[in-house]
Length: 149
Image (cartoon, rainbow, N blue to C red; front, side, top):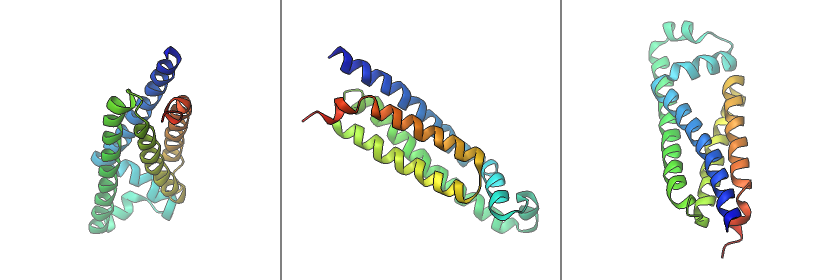
């Protein structure tokens, strides 16, 4: 039983770090979308975001609002994940492990694919760190969660 609690505690800390990373990423995307868009736009189009935004302010506003919307979805995923992590996951409820797996992987992989397409190596690296944290954080207690009836 002590080993079970230890694996969940270690996993909890790793997944908490992952959720905080996701939360920070989402908040940056919501409140400073230009940081993400500048790098992605340049990588994807080969054009300067600032020059494009100056010459196409309406389209630039549209792109920034789309980025904010994506950040809002990321914020919902991160907050939902934090709530599950702080409650059911700590109690080793089986469904919570699957919730973190599904929500975390969909959220990070969706962003990974987009940022690979956008040729954004900085954000891609952050996303890979998030995916590594979720993998490690879920593998450590997998036996505890998956062996329950």
